[in-house]
Each structure stands twice: as structure tokens, then as C-alpha cells.
Image 1: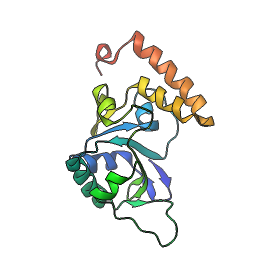
Image 2: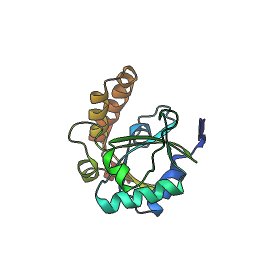
Image 3: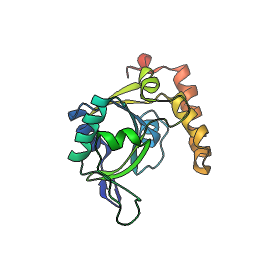
Image 4: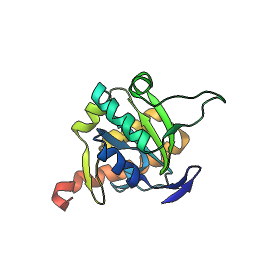
Length: 173
């Protein structure tokens, strides 16, 4: 766990709350990369979430339980994180009582909850959660094209090569 502006960053605590509220999501970004072998420092939990009405209802309840608030709004502007607002936004940067949470609907063209979930890998630990495939993480980093993504891409491509040689099922994952 690391410290951020919202206090201690505890991604597993966020995931537990999401699971308790039956939110359908796929973890992406640094957490998803790290649990698959491409480690880099991250101070937020990035995820793609299902967007049908019931899913948005579950997500709104989870965000209320997390005391989530949007980050970076102009002074005096408030947003209620309910089904309606979640349906109208495509990217949400939030602070929660367990650290930063970024919600995305489509981090790269064609990569939605449905497409990511179809090939997600399930991680079993102190919480159970799906993570985007390494190939999808590579596609997201290529699309983002930020300077920091060059190093991330190199790590992810090495992990992808290793996974092709030794798939997770054969290692007992």
C-alpha cells in the first residue's frame, strides 16, 4: 500500500467493496499488469465497468460506500455519482476512502467491459477479481501513447512472450 492525496492506497479494499455490491468490472492499468508479472509503481486502481442500468445502480451504491468523489472539478461544481451521471460520463477520476479509482468505459477502441471480460484472467487472493489480458493491456498502452507507456509496453511484451511459452493454466494459476 502507498500513500496518495486521499490517504492510504488499498486497491484490494476497493475491489472488495465493488464485489460486495456485485459490480461487474475488469481491472486494467498497473494493477492488472503487476499481478501478471509486469511490475511498475501505481497509485490508482483503473477499471472498465459494465454499463447497463442494473450495473450502474450497483456501481453507484459501491461508490457511495467508498465515499467516492470526482477529482479535478472546477470550484463550486458538484456531481452526484448516481446511475444517470455514471451513464453520461465515459471517464471518471475519483478519490475514495481507500485511494484513487479511475473508471473508464472504453480505454482503447473496441475494448469495452464485454470484450475485456471475455478474455480476462481471474485473480484469486484476498479478493477475487478479473484482470485484462496482457494483449489487451498492450493495446491500451499503445493507444494511450504517453511517454511512460514506452517502458510499460516493453515490460508487457516480455510478459506476453513468457505467457505464450508457459500459459497460466499450465503453471497452476
